[in-house]
Each structure stands twice: as structure tokens, then as C-alpha cells.
Length: 121
Image (cartoon, rainbow, N blue to C red; front, side, top):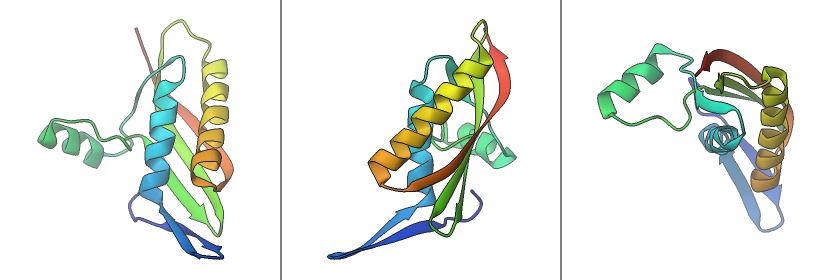
């Protein structure tokens, strides 16, 4: 997420503007709650430096959000637990993240991509 985009939704009483950062937060929290996911993987050097400097984990680390019109595409970079079926963990993450973003934010998620970057014991 190099630039912060947003999805705008026009309602009778006004406009709702959801930032890509908010989408990434919901997706990240949901992914970490899934069985078999033990963490998110840094997708850039900036994430790693931020974690070292501030001493806390960036909650949107390992998540890229792309917005194309009113559609949302989410890329997740995860680390899974050794001994779990990676295919099942990834499928579970896809379904849970899609549901959470659509339910909590009211957005149309067209694709959730899970990239398994490592396995941890």
C-alpha cells in the first residue's frame, strides 16, 4: 500500500469513504484469527524498519489493498503453522477475509490472494 486510496459509497444521507488502510486493518485482524496462520510476512523493507524503530508490529504488515473502481483486491502475505494443510488454511483465510470486509465495511471484494511466505514451527 504505497499510496492510500479509498472506496467512496454514496448514500441518501451522505458519502461513506473507506480508506485502503482501514480495509487492510480489517483483513489483517481477520487473517490472524484464522486457524493455522501464525503471522504476517513483511512485504517490504519499510515494514521491517518500522517494526524495528517503533518496537511494535504494524497491523497492516503483509497486506496490499488495490482498489479498482468499486472493487477491492486484497493480497495477503502470511506465515503458516508447520503441520497444517496449507491449501485448507489459505482457503479459510480467503473466505474469512472476504466475508469480514464485505460484512463490516460493506465493500465488494472481487479477489483475495493468499501468498504463503513461510512455515513456522
